Image (cartoon, rainbow, N blue to C red; front, side, top):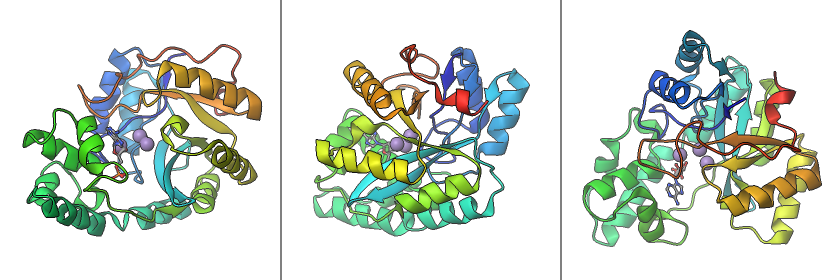
Length: 276
Ligand code: AMP
Ligand code: MN
Ligand code: MN
Ligand code: MN
């Protein structure tokens, strides 16, 4: 099984339409795929239809933005019912602040001498309500302020940088409730990206488990090989199901393409075994 259960399309901050991501996943050897756009189910029908036409397995998905202990974390919901009203309403609420936050990012960057970035970022967005830091990053690269989108995060958009604007996303308990209401499995996305102390990680995993969480990403395009090993160990310790996904957004962005990650360590329980 070549499962890739985390990636993005033009519905959020990816650069390919859902059917194009499906084709790229299939070309990359993926046999079980999930499109997991940020806070939005709008690409799910197109993704599933494209996967089925290619003979590729499909799990519906979404990546929910959450604020936990003042920090942003991402929770992937897999195998959710895309018609579940509680999930649909919760996601609409989650993304409702993006426009005002985008304007504030534009003002913050203008204050350090980089003008018109909100308008510039909008050129990269399908739906202005979905504006994200990735869209700002692409515009700043286009204008020569940085070499790559990850460079933009290090210089301008990451936590503590001049264009960073704090934001309150959904509560962990709410995101978990919506995923459960929709019959899905909640997965902690890219834990290696969270700047938590060991004590905070324990509190986070404990709360996730108390809220019914059972799965964690181990092999992801957002982790280094050292972090594959570190979070495989976490999965063993907590008895979590393990997930694998590239977090693909666009060709030439990010570490790895669809379907190209190493397999999960053989002793871990793959999350798809609980879902298929
Ligand atoms: P937002 O939801 O608007 O805060 O944007 C978050 C998105 O920015 C993530 O989903 C990633 O696609 C992207 N991102 C976050 N950190 C980085 C980074 N260090 N390098 C490149 N992209 C990043
Ligand atoms: Mn993204
Ligand atoms: Mn994420
Ligand atoms: Mn993602």
